[in-house]
Amino acid sequence: MNRWIAWILLFVSLAPGRALSGERIPTVSRTESALSVSAPSALLMEKETGTVLYEKNAHERLFPASVTKVMTMLLIMEDIDSGKLSLDDVVTASARAASFGGSCVYLEEGEQMTVREMLKCIAVVSANDCAVAMAEHLAGSEEVFVERMNRRAEELGLEDSHFTSCSGLFDDGEHYSSAYDIAVMSRELLKHPGIKDFTTIWLDSIRGGAFELNNTNKLVYWYPGCTGLKTGYTSSALYCLSASAERDGVEYIAVVLRCESIEKRNQDAKTLLNYAFAGFQLCPLRPAEELPALPVDMGERDSVPLRVEGEGFALVPKSGAEPAYRIALPEQAGAPLREGERLGTLTVTLGEETIAELPITAAETVPHIGFGGLLVRLLGAMLGMKC
Image (cartoon, rainbow, N blue to C red; front, side, top):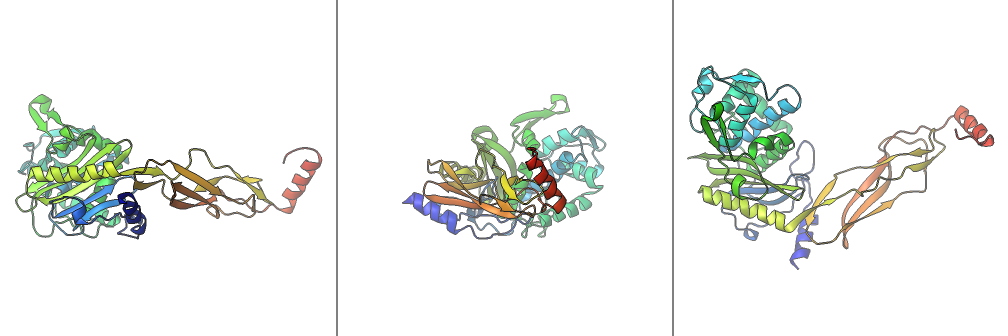
């Protein structure tokens, strides 16, 4: 009975949600009583598909403290992966960056570190001074960098986020985000695999071993598969966390905000992640074999390659069944054909349930054959040659 309820929740609730860069975010909503989560605001999301498995006050605007640095690290990683920034670039700390307290590595004015060291300090110990130094290095000032943070939030469709700093150190009433928005930006950050080289560090050091770093996210040490991601705490934000973990090729993001203690923060994240790993799996929406080319009548070419449109995976409740793929195509298509023109349907089933029906389209344009081409083809056929 629980299995059928899970299926119903999955397929009935695939209504359009808030968009991620124009995409539809599928949702499998769970009632608050279904899971014991003490956090006033929480959200559980699968990374590959963006499917939301659980939410609780997920769009409430709250001060996220240092979880803000998810967006800061995202912009750093985007610059690294685009080639604008190198991990070996040297960053010089300004007097302003060196003045920041809270979680920090006590930069001195004029002290130099590589981007690699700065990013490590931000990811592992939530260093406010390094976040500001990186913001100034990338944008000239923290204010300009914050403008970029807000533009990126708008691009991602984050309707409940506004930043006034790159660190999340100060609660000025205008700096806020939500569990949903943090999950979306965390998902975007995890699209840059190199970030895990930093967010999975448990113990490390800088300054030639003179200053030790111990990850503020204790799940990195004791939760199997933990890949990060970012903690936060101030007296006004209380204990916040965006936690990510990966097992067997599937990765989840659990965001909890305003927890009463570190212990409750970690327990809530663990509860959400355990629920996801125990109950759901990714189902590939493509067969292992390539689609055959489709014959074309009266075209400049005698066949057209095909492709399947849409998502590559769907998140489904675990059932033990293997996906089956049914391809429906005509025996041939008539030219002219436009690239992207729908020619058939791929139906994916799991047991007796239909998971997806995806359009099969032409991967290339095939113009109608002209008189000259038809004549050449006819002569070739008469002479036993393929033209």
